[in-house]
Image 1 (cartoon, rainbow, N blue to C red):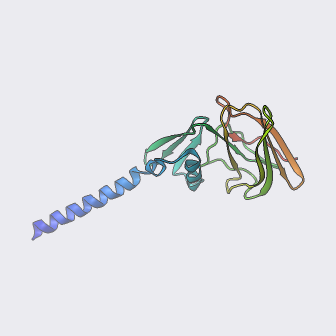
Image 2 (image 1 turned 60 degrees about the vertical axis):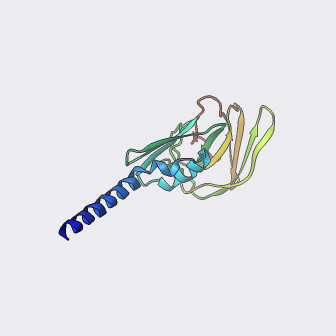
Image 3 (image 1 turned 180 degrees about the vertical axis):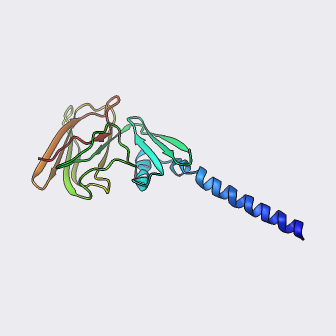
Length: 178
């Protein structure tokens, strides 16, 4: 009877350890099969928690977790323009880190207009609301060199011509509303 109890205890402990290990070892698995926009949305769950480092590069989202698991999700034919319009303060950035970057204007509703100056096509127009991290995520087609982005908020405006070609930045923190 003691042998049976010992074996049951060992198996239960081993199962619990395996379950615990698989839960920790599978942080990256939560991103498996996601599209780049879905992965970015999920990345926001890790913002400010210090349990993951997720960076959006021009061609791939790179996610690294505290359990040493990691995954890369291709952005395919899309390029992220994660923009933090600001009034008073900003931070320098080139490639967006949705787990760490923080913009000044949190949950503010404003107008945005994105025009491809090469073909005069309006790619986005309407109201948007900044997220809890102060950014607005705009997925745009790759290989566009002249995207005029304009934000309007409380009578203030900011316009900048951005690119999604080559190794263009994904984190835009240079649009001051004046």
